[in-house]
Image 1 (cartoon, rainbow, N blue to C red):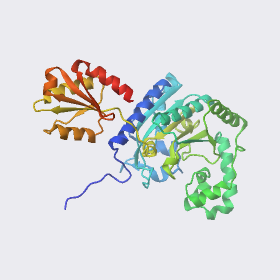
Image 2: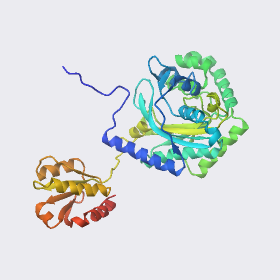
Image 3: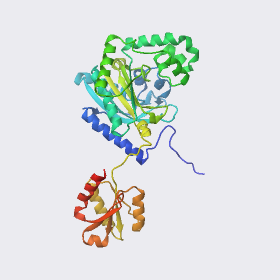
Length: 418
């Protein structure tokens, strides 16, 4: 018996419909990034393991259990993009050339975690980073940009959650408070969180286990750990969001799963996704450059999960560009059909034809099956007069048009159709 192959667990195949959403998201992202003056970086999938141990954090889930390592090498498939872009910036000494940079990236990431709905071993990120400024206006920019990208593909059911961790001293103060408050309840936490209390208390807040979340909620966290400068930074950011009329929810329990975050952290969530509800996230990381051997360079960024967006849009009908189907009402018309198709495509009209030897009825059935909005029928008698039959499938209307006017007429109909 022959082996039946399927995709590797933790990976997905994009169907044509899902790919349409992916391409829409990608194209709209590139358009928006261009408008905001970001430059694209295409970086390798392979990086040194130590980059993420130092950058993301030794006690994070990514480093502890999720990195996909190359056997026998200190090399991993990249699990996220921020540390990689910092490596690029430092390696190329951009602080000496143009210290203020705005980059974006689109591509696959990898994590060796237990696959579940919304959590994959291979997934795609659309992300951006602003390097070289601590301005709260730039925090607002990346949040606004992330929301606009999600909006661009028609995903309206979403929520922005936001918090501030403060500077490194503020984070230490918060960690100390969490450790002291949870010490007596340590035995009620999951095994991982019992270790986290000692090594990295902030990671306890990020735990997704119900028993831990219930205990964490009793901490009654707020902005008390923030120093005056960090509190001012955060309040100014919230004021900008208010002025932009961007809805948000202040969530003092939002810390994100990466140690490099300082000050602003945010998540964009969707009720369409269930328990794994984050579409994307981001924040400020003012100490990451220093941790990776560079200077004190402030930065802020975000990443959106492409598969998460596709999953959230799964039940939303995404309307593709109108499709024009070319059918032949007689034999020997393949050459003419190919010529008509070429003219349509040269005019950026999405078009198709079935070149199999089928009857007109069978061709029309196929055209309907693939969702054609218009059908051009090439008939021998009509072609002698340099005409074709044009059918509007949705309105059940047909007319005979001059071949020379076909493109113009179709474009007008497509415009009204949209």
